[in-house]
Length: 605
DNA sequence: CTAGGGTTAG
Image (cartoon, rainbow, N blue to C red; front, side, top):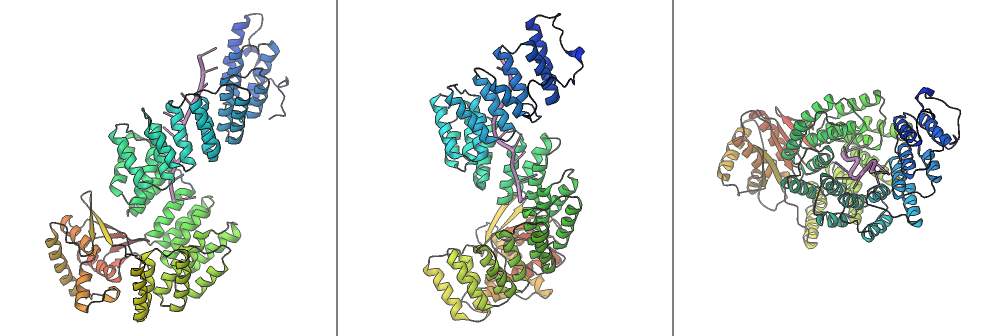
């Protein structure tokens, strides 16, 4: 761009009749005419041509006029910053406005470093920044996550007394948010007297980027209460994300509703976060439906639906969609591979997973991350290829983290490989020793091998270390309200009715051949007591409650914090058949769809 | 006199 000089007279793209004739107009009118023409330019070439005429007429005198010319050029979308730069350099005394224009131009062109350098120049040349300068220069800091510069600039804001400008405040919230200094973001947000939609958007986004989901929803609630509420896609995208992570299905659906009411066509980002919300809150159907109706799909939308299918146990379909994505010419990236590999792992598609992993490394040249190795260790381990899984852990170019060791340990438990399990546990506890469920898996492994002493030793260690087993619970939504059940729960006023139901269910299940499986009850009590305990597992209570309070044939959705036990799994399969209900259960790792006596996991979980 | 803040999802 610099190659084309300002003084290039050779291109005449505009018909000469459009150019003002000097004889007809006085200077002032000519100036106006030129400015009008400049604004109409559709390309840099056209712009240069008019600009050259202006120089030829010697009209480049008025500061307002030259600022206008500069702004037209710098803020155009024809990649004209070099040319704008050459105009800027010819200004004798660039004003605050001119600096603002140039800084904005750099930011628009993603050249954030230059924006900050120019701001620095501005200070050096003692041109005083104003309330228009800061939003844009702070945006540059935000994009670069340049906290040092950001803080200095925050100081300048105070020095110039601009700290009460809403635009400046919003930019500061955003800047600190992008620099992960949530305390500063909140401090500025709190002391704002007037908050705009952008203020809420910035503060919610700041919390979302740190995965502070409860805070996101709380802020969203505050915002709604203060009546600043409008279905803004940029805000709802983060709110939906929070719903996804918290399993807040009801709120998510409400958000969808208000989007539909207020916005005619939802953009890709909102569609993708909606899809993810539905899928991860248990409604794969709804997610698939949205996916199929999306006109524009990208890598992110594909990876959401692929990982969704995987989580729900539909590995084959996940692979199908993955190949459709490739056929459409969309190149899978590292996250897409995490989705498809984990889908393979959930469904036990070992060969397919291995193939994809190799393709990713050697064909697409994507360097595997810890997550990819985690998927592969999980894939092999679950499938019983424990030695291979262990070899992979040892040969990984990066040091395995706790997630990888954890999945190896639980695979060893499933396949009763104590020797390897102990190695995995040792490494796991070296990296993290505060997770009660890790000890339980290990103790469980010993118990399965009837090594009672070792099992007891681990449990004693847990108690000595003050680790308390996370209480398991099940959530169930009945008529848009969420009810929480813990094991042996007696807290609901209708609980006698629930236990009555439990009793009745057990009777019917036994008729269909149900035998309580007490092997996973890790309590030192007799068989009879174990069977009693089993009956009161939170998932069973939740199902009984839902069977009583929902209409015949309607689906039941349950969210658990822990993995369910084998007994609850086979119990739920039978309930789905006898009571003719579809039951979806989300546990720590995945979804189970119970229908007609079967589960979508095909007992591979 | 000209121009401005939050561009989000896996």
